[in-house]
Length: 488
Length: 118
Image 1: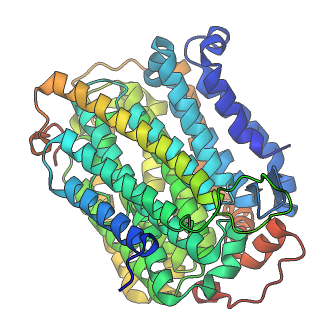
Image 2: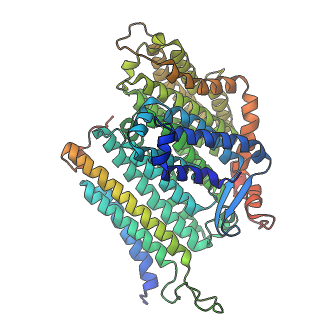
Image 3: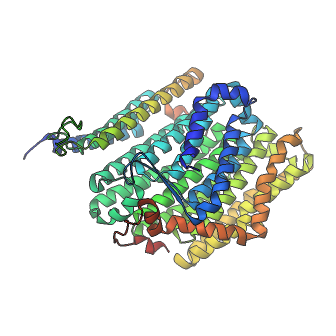
């Protein structure tokens, strides 16, 4: 199985979207592509865990287009595809896909971009795939063609363009000083770059990635984009897009081997993002906007956790967050309401299954046992405690209290008796909620099974030496100061 | 002081980038914001070109197989071609969204974007 197919198949499907939509009717085409990607990733995962696949299109690495399908990339493709299906299969998005072929094309290009980010072993290709994913995301934000969605799309486009300018500046300086853009080569040549140039590179790339991963204070556009794009697309961005940019941040920063002060800065930014996100969510009356702030906060916690050394926990938290947000945004989309928090009153009594699922997902988001969120949060807390200190742990717990305040209010609303609106959930639409429900419960009851997997995945992200050997072959034994030691 | 093209170009490109970013940050009119964005993108493109050392180099086309040195680095040129295409797409999409937004609201002023607020 060639990793390049993860990119080629969605791209090809995008170009053939017209005729293919006649076969895969009713807007199912993007979901079918995601199912294929999920099956392919799932079948590749066992072998990739043992031996990562390194594919070079054209010439030999470091020349040519280098794709690296390691455990982290394949697992995240699997997770994001599975939970992406929840949203692409929702009535709201399928209506868009059915009405116009261009929206199908945009969704497929978005998937190609995201899978490309996961698989690319080369900075410039990463930039190209990031732009493909971003450009399609800007246009998708404007799907509903309301003033709010246009406003969200314009803000998204401006934020993303600034990020890409900084990314390009970083890439230019890297190329000037090292003559390569291959990540594996860079991991050995970066320590030889002069300090001043390295400072420019790190600040430019960090600025770009901080905008993309929604870190404070560069995330002011996020809630607007989510609210403007509507619940189903917000779910897609939460379940897929942030996961790709977070992976990119982790991959690039670990391979570059940055100083401890930068790591500390990232942990600080992550914790600050978490606090700001939770406080922002607290005062929202729009459920989509509330969950958008919560996504920002979770991304902050994941970043802080990863750079504090809780690598495996950060991966668990990423998986858990994908599942939970996909489910919750789908429920809001299914309810088909204005999205205001008050309008969710009583949906639990109208449909017990939806109510129970929403409650379980919210409790997992809060990090309560026996759900998967608990394992993630606990291990992140352990990592923060050992590398930053008790202060960071207290900060996370305070943020969790704030989180509990608005999330539990949401739960009590869901089970409130006096319902004002009529809901009609079709069983066929809600049955897919079983996917996140199973993952959240199974992962919470048997955290060992998930953790044994994520340990290997996290190792793939932080073990620079084996990444180098896998990509460049046996010749990659260039001695360098392994700056990653600081993060472990 | 020797002001050759090679020393001036990086400084000039940096100036264009800063000018563009300043425009994005301070302009209120959406179209002016997209013009500023294009200026910044042009600056980035020039930055790539400035590091290829094109002043003394030869065009990187292998006319004579025995000559293998003295060419300019073709890779930044290839990258910038991609970047120009992406930049054009971003500008086109941005202006299309702006046109639609203007159709709806009759304004191009970003400070009047009030639909999505806390």
